[in-house]
Length: 166
Image 1 (cartoon, rainbow, N blue to C red):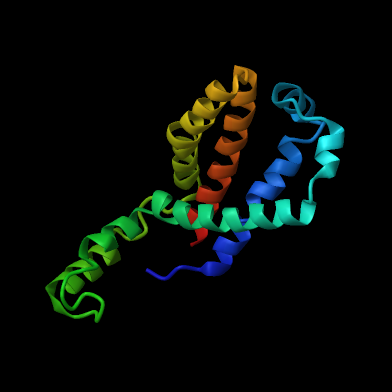
Image 2 (image 1 turned 45 degrees about the vertical axis):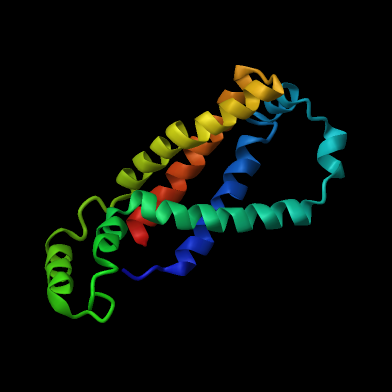
């Protein structure tokens, strides 16, 4: 399968966009600041170029991971990748894969399907990681819910977009 890297780079912006909205004072900014011990002074003291730049780089990594998480065809292809002749597009495995993909290749390639995978990822990966950190940092469950909500929406949008268009 070909990867449309422009979509990976575009969806890497989603954590920044959703974060700007989610953590704004219009939504959960004040609650997040109280639950995390953040102050306006602390927010203003950060190097925003570095913070936004690294967030974008991490967003690229996240989008690459979401490609394989939400698009099942990548997993199917990996079953045969190491078989002789497969990378040369010759041999019985290649023929089987080509026929399989022509018949089933577009199944589950919708925004909704990808969004469900993104939400599942938030619940079974992000939520436990955030919760473990919050337990050791003695953070509240409100803190956990704010962050898990952010990741559920963010991963749903990333994975949904990639699944629909990649």
